[in-house]
Length: 401
Image 1 (cartoon, rainbow, N blue to C red):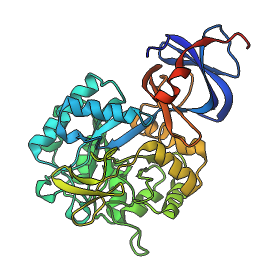
Image 2: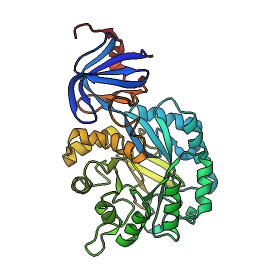
Image 3: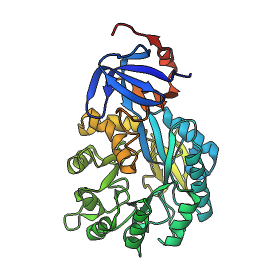
Image 4: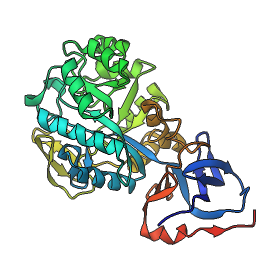
């Protein structure tokens, strides 16, 4: 279904950058938000959603796969499936995220992400590549096979940068590895964000890494040394550092509701970003799947390795938003922005994405009162629409304003 180049969207609630607005009109022109008003200022087609909320499209900056496909498949077909699946859940952009595997397969995966970055898929857009793998330690390896861990060297980093064709945005690493501070500075100088994870680093090692330019913690509390009263650990260091960004998996399994509240009280709304960390099993039945080189068992939607370690998730971001609201008592607008504006700011794309604001791309999602996604827009055009609301997308002219 093709929408006009110029039209109004009207919704029961519009989650703008600064407030939740009732019954407002959002003007879309050539894929860009032109105005947000209480009434129509021009006679143009209008699409009304009196029962729904209009939100900024979500950004999932840490996702491995969905619906039977994995970034490590290193195929355009898998990227397309992941992209289309994410659009069904309100996601308009994502970082294709790797997991520890053979060096050959890793470089092939980065090459595929790089190709998709330059030639976008049809659903959620590829915002770049995220290296989660290879540069970790065994103590908190999680679902990463230590047989394939590599030295944290400039040669290895340069090979990944080259394979990704400029798409590499984030590198996760364990800061206790030899040479980590030099590599963090090297990545930072290239505009690539270093994040700390799958690490047994203590508080001081983490502080030193943050001082060298590391940006924060990978899925905070998971895959890292937790808080102890004689060593606040990696988790304590990233929570206490006012500039550090933390990824949060709000599925009700990875983090207790009280820990969600703790993170929110420590980081506030501006340094806490939701991720799905979703794997190939997302949107699939329980069963046994592959994550990188390891078998993963999914039971009741929870993914674990044979040893019992959590192995990513089957989470979607709209469910994560609801969990923040219900489990951690976080205000709805802030919870929504933790899946949109805050990741956009972290990635450096908030000038065009992440909020409903004049001048930004019309990358939006429409949800019901329970945050079930009804439609997703990318640059003002439908990327996904639920059949139940499809008839609402027939533009009409409203001359009563």
